[in-house]
Length: 433
Ligand code: PMP
Image 1 (cartoon, rainbow, N blue to C red):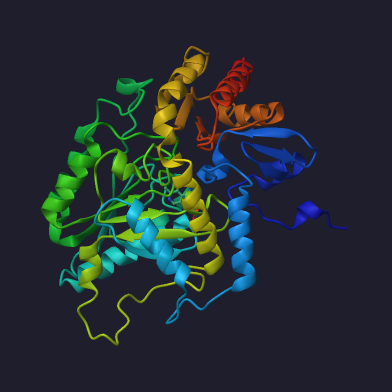
Image 2: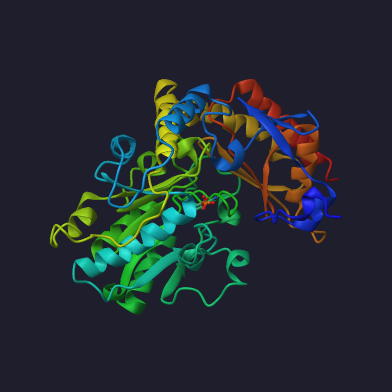
């Protein structure tokens, strides 16, 4: 006889280990999950970096339910519905200036593949068809599509699936614990790493490079915050050589670092920006790609009857997801949540000091309402996973990736809840012995 746990092949999970000791969540409200045993768990990660306005927001539930009864689905090709146009306009308004065109997807991975295809198609459209190379970065995470894992730089996501896209290079990552341990905000050192792009341009020729993609702040690789001046330098070099710059803001979008997008916090505007997660507060799958007017314009020169960009998804701009996203953006605006991370930043950073001197903690990186707590490597396997299981047992959800514990709580968090996260986490780290 098969058990209920025999059939679901869980993503990014050690399934056999999980089945021996399952963690099953059943309810969510505000800052808390409740598991199937009725235990309350403080959400230190906004789900998977997505529930920025906290859980169970009735405004979103009502908007989704209203839209489902009004119109459940509309074909997305050669047909539209008003909410998708309204949402695109709202995103253009809150996004970096000049990124006024919006393409809808259903996830971060789809946003990334859309952005890469758009970059290649744009170069062709302007007569630069020799520009086919894509440049990503070591330790970058850009989802799980073939495009995303090709430009991505996390070995476990790539090694079983080759060969990947040809003509891809990677810049070095910017993590430099030796020089920058325990930096609050942007590290002072490392901007020169962006100059490596000049080296790749010299090696391959600018006329072969279509685009560079980076997360302005890497999340999944363990919270890597860009050194001061790094993103600016990438922008200068890409602009000089006619290379497009893509920011993957799937994690940093929607207030995580204190502005709608990291691009605005750090004053660097890419040509293309990907987002997802916080767009619907995690309630329904949806992503978006914000595109510059000039890229869009390059596709608008052919005959009016021609399809400009041969790309799209059955669920692009799904009406129910649009309703969820519009209700989410209303909450963000009404509660000024997109600026909350700046408001709480100083408190958050000093609360993190509680962890600084604990054994095993070798670095803490933080900006906005994000933190990466790096633990010393351990021959018995990553300590971070042990901390994660201990925290969960104690009623706190944190995220373990490699040797790093990542924190990214909903932006509605109170100072008392920040303190609670730090004391539960400190207890779990201490228990490592
Ligand atoms: N890009 C980045 C920067 C991400 O962090 C993620 C997900 N964590 C993705 C892309 C992929 O998003 P999804 O899982 O929605 O496909």
